[in-house]
Length: 296
Image (tube, rainbow, N blue to C red; front, side, top):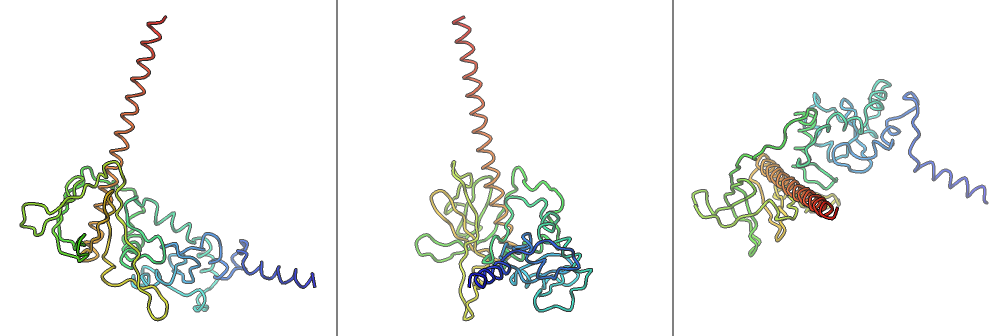
């Protein structure tokens, strides 16, 4: 009985243990997908991806696979690692083993700026997911280092839908971002702002995020409503503001500009605090020298 129990435990352990790295000739695509570096989707960190882009050499989840298919086969050729068994020839096995998700990130995510909107979970909206995937593989934005922060950030103006704090309804407002101040007006022709938001944070962090609000369809799948694809939030020290952009281009133009501005002024506050600390240390050191000089 003990031998039977031990044998059953060994079989169960073998099922969940990641495969040891073998030679390419001994490995299947499922073996490569189960390697530690491939256990999360190359684009959104979803667990146990079961799709592959065979010309990019990566493993992706079903949500990201849908975006990859829309890129065209000249960018990404998508295959199921479970269903498409006829395409796994030895040369492709070699390529997928040599690339994989970790190596791919080293190539396509070399210089991702801190403020860039990226999918961090399988529940990320399709708009964020698609923008990220196209930036990585079509535009190849992060393969070369660029001056991502502009000082000062150029002014940005345009319409957004803003959620009212009282009625919770979304109303069209005209927004102007200059320096660390985001002002909003009832109309573009209005000269007096209805309100202003300080992006410097007044010593506290300002965050611009995408809320994870999803509906569950009849099959139990999480689907984000169309109106929420363009929704983003600004978390200020005293209030959280909700906005809806007019289209995807406007969404990322505003989100990235707001994040850059908040980051820039966060750096400015840190540098000012360091400068003050340095001056205090210099002052203390000078006073000590004067004191000991007088004593001696």
